[in-house]
Every structure is written in C-alpha cells, then in structure tokens.
Image (cartoon, rainbow, N blue to C red; front, side, top):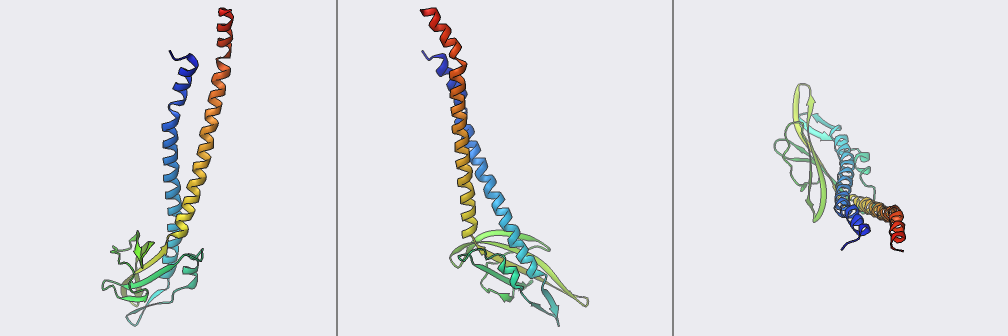
Amino acid sequence: MMSIRNRLLLWLLAPLIPAALVFMWTVYNQVRSTTEAAHDQLLLGSALAIADRVVLENNQLSVDVPYAALQMLTRAAEERVFYAVLSLPDGETITGYRLMPKMALAKDEVKFLTTDFRGEAVRLVGIHGRALSYGKEQDFAVLVAETMGLRSQVTSQLVQFSVIAGTFLILGTLILTLTAVHFGLRPLALLAAAIYE
C-alpha cells in the first residue's frame, strides 16, 4: 500500500510534467513569433524606405535606392539581402534582381512570405505603392528579401535560454515540493513513531 508521503508527492508532482510541456511549448511559440515580428518590421522598414524613393518622371518609374535601406538589414556577414522594384500591372523590373519571387499584391497591401530564392530560405516582404506626377499615376511593387540565418540563430538562442530557465524553474519547484512534504509530514511521522513505541 502506498504511503501517505508517496501519495501526496504523486498528487503534487503528477501535474508538473504536463504543465512543464505546456510551458515549454508556449515559450517556444512566443519567442518565435516575437523574434519573427521584430525582424519583419525591420524588413518592412527597408521596403518602405525604397518605396519612398520611387518617382514617376516622363511617364517612367525611376528609383534611387537608398543604401541605408539595405544596409540596416545586413547585420551579419553571412546575411544576404535582395530587392526589386516592379512596375504594375506588367511586372517589369525597374531595378534590382530580375528573378525575385513574384508576389500578388492588392492595392496598398503589405504581405510577408517565407520562400526559397537561389537555393536559400528567405523572408520576403512585398508592398504595393503608387507614384504620382502631374495628375498621372503608376502602380509599383517593392520586394525585399533577406536570408534567414541570423533570424534562425537568434530564435534558437532565445528558445535555448527559455528552456534552460524553465528547467531550473521546474527543478526548483520539485525540490521545494519534496522539502515541504518532508517537513510537513514530519510531525505525523513523529506521532506515529511515538504510538508504536
């Protein structure tokens, strides 16, 4: 027959394993989504900076790509950045990489996509814009893509840190529970010993 101490420990510690799994899964999803959102905002900032420099001159789109718009994405030597400015609706490349992954964009839409480009996984943002000049207008799209090495590395490091912190939290809870049960049942154990003497 199971002792009171073991039964109490079972009831206290049994929920700890599923709670720990839920905690780890929640932390992983939260870290991943937060990291991705932060990187996506930086990617979008670069695309918007390029879009601000698109002008319509003599019924032709032209763009002076600001160096800073792409420089802020190259945070590590192994990261690569690709961009393209397309006229719409024909999709002709005004400047940038001509083989950029195509993305269907609605009016004034901003869209993110994870895809492959040149054999590498990239995070791609596309924005729809419109250039105006003397009553004329021309739609265009700006596409900016970044390789995902640093993004994955940062996410992995944050997840590892969270898992380690969670593991220490669980171990601490386990030790505290064992200690509390031991000292909490000590008077009962002393009483039982006195009775059987």
